Image 1: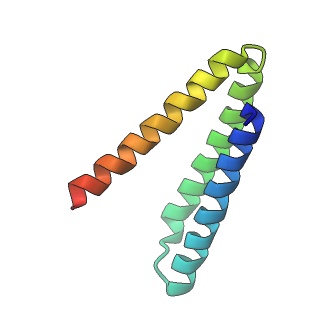
Image 2: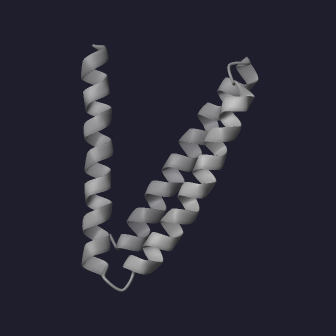
Image 3: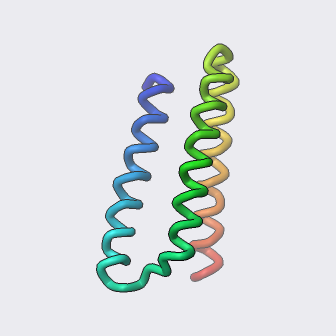
Length: 87
C-alpha cells in the first residue's frame, strides 16, 4: 500500500471511531465541555504540526515511512500495555 494511502486510511479510521465515540458520550451526558475544548484545540494544533512535518519529510520518503512506522508501533505497544495492565 502506498504511504499516502496508509496515512490517509489511518486518519480516516481514527476520525470515524473518535467521532462515533464522542457523539455517544456527548448524548449520554458524559462530556466535560471545558476539558473537551482543550482537547479539541490540542488536536487542531497537532494536526497543523502533522501537516507541517509531513511536508518537511515528503522529500525524504524513507524517513517519513520510518517515522510513521515507529509511531504506529508505539501506539500499538501502549494500547497492548494498557490492556494487559487492566486485565
